[in-house]
Amino acid sequence: MTGTPPGQGRPALDETIQHPTRLAVAAFLSACDEAEFAAVRDGCQVSDSVLSKTASALEAAGYLDIRKGHVGKRPRTWLSLSPDGRQALDDHLTALQAIVAAARQAGGSREQAGQSG
Image (cartoon, rainbow, N blue to C red; front, side):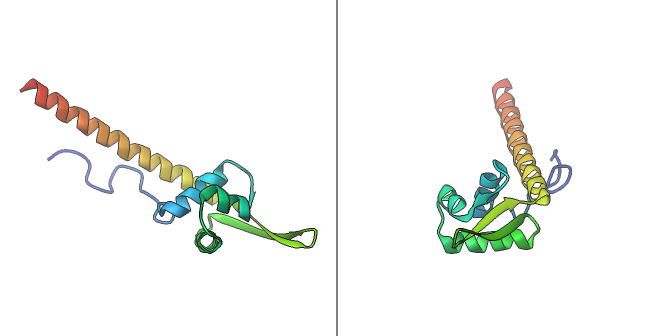
């Protein structure tokens, strides 16, 4: 059997980022400097409680910065990816692209092997 053993020689997926909701939040925030909690909630189509738990997990990993303040008398929360969070997202996406590229290459090799026989 040829090829690279699993987990060797290719970028690793980020265990924190790979959760679908965390990935959606990180991707949403990657397009801006910061966003209000409600905008992220609506953009990612999740409930307040799901976003709150997701934000807490990303913050605990050092991937998210949470800023609280007021607009007038109303409390507001803003979310932003930290530099480590941006790097983690970039690395995770690179790993996904490597996995897809390897699968496509392997699929092409199988097709060629089947046609030559």
